[in-house]
Every structure is written in C-alpha cells, then in structure tokens.
Length: 217
Image 1 (tube, rainbow, N blue to C red):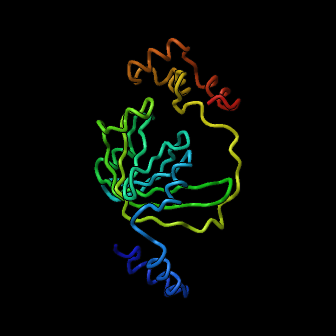
Image 2 (cartoon, rainbow, N blue to C red; image 1 turned 120 degrees about the vertical axis):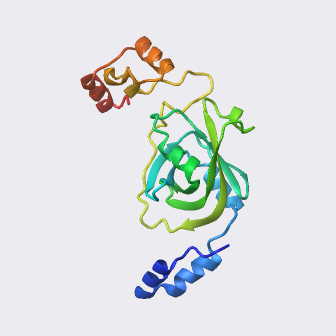
Image 3 (cartoon, rainbow, N blue to C red; image 1 turned 180 degrees about the horizontal axis):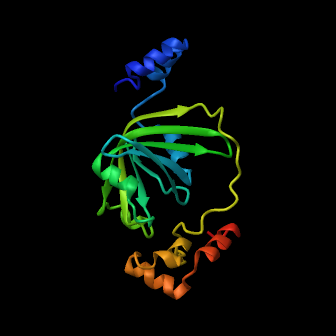
C-alpha cells in the first residue's frame, strides 16, 4: 500500500513541523482493509458524504442518506450502497461511471467520531444484493484502497430529530419528492413521476416554499 502523501503534503508537514507525526499516521494508522470495529461503525450510519471527480478532475461532494445499515460491508475490501431516486442529474454516479475514484466520509454527530475511506467504485445493475434494497435502482460497489479514522475534535455534537420520510421502507409507499410536484418541472419529469404529481396535486413556487418552511420538504 502506497503512502497517502505527495510532495506537496510533505512540504507542508515540513513547514509546520508535523513530519514525524504524519509519517507515524501514514505507516501505522492508515490501512487497506475494513476492520471489524470499522465495519460496525459504517453499518451503523444512516448517512455519509461521497466525494467524486469529474473528467477534468474537479471534485464534488454529495450527501447520501438511508436507513442504518444501508451501507453494507461485504468483505474487508468491499462495500456497497444503494442508488435511490434522485434529481435526475446522476452527477456523482456519472463521475463514478466515468472516473471511478471515490472518497467516503462517515460521521457520528451524536458521539463525535469519523472515518474516511478511499477506493474505486462502479455501478452494478444486476448485483445479487440489489433485491435486498427496496426501490434501489442500482448498487454502487466500492473496492477499498485506504481506510483511516480521523480525529473528531472539530465535529460538533448534534442530535437526530427524525429520519427522512423519503427513505424507502417496507410496508408503505415512498412519498413523491415535493419538488416533483412543482408546476415548472411537469414538462420534464419522467412519465411515472408526472402521473403521480398530477394525482397528488401540482403546486406553485409559493406553495412549495410555504411547505418547505413548515418542514414538509
């Protein structure tokens, strides 16, 4: 397993006097497999941040949420997570399909703790685990390259109030995203979403804003 650091990293470490510390972390702390305690932490999360890069190397970060356990560690070098209905851009997923390089950041905000992971990802449309994820359109399978725990010093403590009503659950129909009922998008929605929007009632921007302010988004 190669070093995390480039010459630019090492120059900053030298400038700020952290070379020995950084070397210790690189050699003894960063590893290439998911440990048992890390697996438990990952599978206990209900969200994570996903970093991808576009064809020009520009980075982007997106939030991914689900029920606890929606990210599954298949083995010490592989994890999967589902692709649910989104905004239609497929921006992060397009970056994965094109470049494959990803970074994942898992955070516990209630008992501050965080874990970082780097690897190579791909979309799987016929993965055998896909059937276990309600309403998932595909799975993302990540081949792990590096894993390490980060200092949680600056992670603010938050309490979860409630889960998103849009996370698919057994036994109920997942609500249509409120923005898909906006009158301004009806002509560009996929047909199935447009039908549902008409059934549930098309709304204007003022109504949408009022609902969002009431916490109905």
